[in-house]
Image 1 (tube, helix red, strand yellow):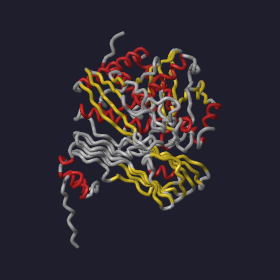
Image 2 (cartoon, one colour; image 1 turned 60 degrees about the vertical axis):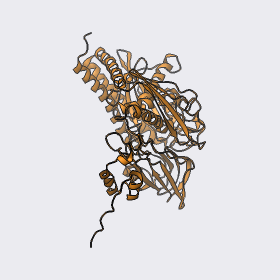
Image 3 (spheres, one colour; image 1 turned 120 degrees about the horizontal axis):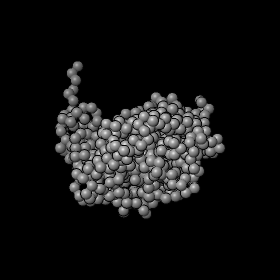
Image 4 (cartoon, helix red, strand yellow; image 1 turned 30 degrees about the horizontal axis):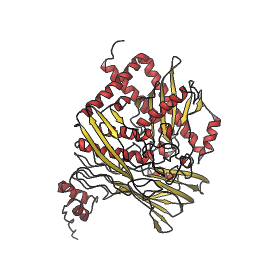
Length: 570
C-alpha cells in the first residue's frame, strides 16, 4: 500500500475528531439532566477493536475521561474474550459504571458499542455521562462519609442495555428501581445511545469515502506521530528527578489530610511517575481507582503539552508506576465517590508542582482543583415531585510566567461549566441570592492567581438534604516559584439563622434543610506565580480599582501602596 500523503492524513485526523465532537454535541443537546445538557459533564471517543486504546476523543469532552474510557473499553473487550460478558452483536450497547473495571465514581456511567465493517468489529465507540443520581445513601451519590462502595449507589458490571438496537426492559427496570427520579433517566439514556449511533453513522461515511484500509493506516500513523511529538516535547526537559507533594483535606471520615508524594524522573525522552510514600488507602470516599490515577497524570501532561495530538500514542512515553498500597490504587470495596472530581485534581496538582521546576516558562501554579460537588435532593411540593440537583462550580487558575491566572475557570479535569443560574432556578425550588467572583481569592505573585466563585443558594420550598464532596478547604492551591497559595474553599450552611461550617470543611453529607435555609460556597482562587513584590504596581492598582483586592490586601500581599481614590467634590 502506498504511504499516506500528508494532506489525506490531516483530513482523516480532523474527520475522526469531528466524529467525536458531533457525538459530544448530540449527547448534550438530547440529554434531560442539566449537568449533561448545560454543564457538559460527558465525553465521547473512538477506541481500538483490539485492546480499547484511544484513537480519538471529542475536544469538548472531559479530559479526565481520556484514559478512563480507554481502560473501561479494554475491560469490556477482555471480559467478552474470557466469557464473563456476553459476546456482542450489531446494535448492542453495553453499560458499565464499576469503578474497579477501568472507571471513576459510580455516577459516571459509560456506554460501549461495537462498530462493524464486513461482519467484523472495526472499532468501539464509548461515551461517559454523569448521571445526577445513581442511588446510594444520599441524593446525588456524593456520600462524604461512605465507608464502602455499596453506600455510594448502584454498581453495574458490563451488561447489554441495548440488544440489537432495542433497550432491554429488564435491565432498565433494575436501574430505575435503584435510583432516584427514575422517570427522568430515560432522556439521558436515549441521548447517550443516540450519540453513539450518530458516531457510527459519521464514521461509516468516512470509511465508505476513504476505505477501511486507508483509515486503519491513518490511525496507526497518527498514533506513531503522537508518541513522537510527546517524546520530542519531553526531550527538552533536563534529565533528573523532580519531586512534589499535594494534599487532600480529609477522606470525609477521618479528619486528617491525605498526602500525595510524587517523584517524576525524566530520562532521555520519557517520564516516569512514582507515587511511592503517598497515604495508605483511606476509610472514606477519597480513594482513587487505578484508571483514574493514570488518567489524572495523562490530563496533567495534556495541560502542559496541549499541542500533542490526543491518542494512545501520546501516553506511550509516560510510565506511571502502580501506586500499590496507597489510596491512589483503590480496590473493592473501598469507597471512591471523590476520586474523579477531587483526588484526580490533587494528582494533577502534584504533577504541575513537580513539572514547574523543570519547565518554569510553561507550567502554571496550581489551579483551584475542585469541582465543587454540591448535591441537593428533596421534594418540591409546588410540583408534587422529587428532585436531585447537582451543582458544579469553577475556580481560579494559577498564574504563570506570562500572565495572571484565569478567573472562574472550569475544573482541571474537564470543560464542564456551571449550569446557568436561570436554568437551575427553573428546574429546582431554589433561588441564587448571590453569584459573583470571589474577590481577594487569587494567590499573590508576580502574576497572581485567578479568582474563584462565590455563590449563595436559598431553598424556596419543601425540605431537602445537602451533601458536599469538595476539596482545598484546608489548604489553598499551591503557589509556584515564590508565589503564594490561593484562598481555600469555603462552605457555610445557614439553618434557622445559625451558621454551620462542616467539621471537614469541604465535605459533609445529609444536611437537612428547609425553606429559607441557605448554602454559601466560596471556591478556591489559583496559586500565585513568582515573587509578589515583583508585580507591576500599576497592575496592583488596577486590581484595587476593580475591587479584586482592598487597599489593605494590596499592601499586605504585594507590598504595594495604593492611594485611596480621590474624594468627590459636590
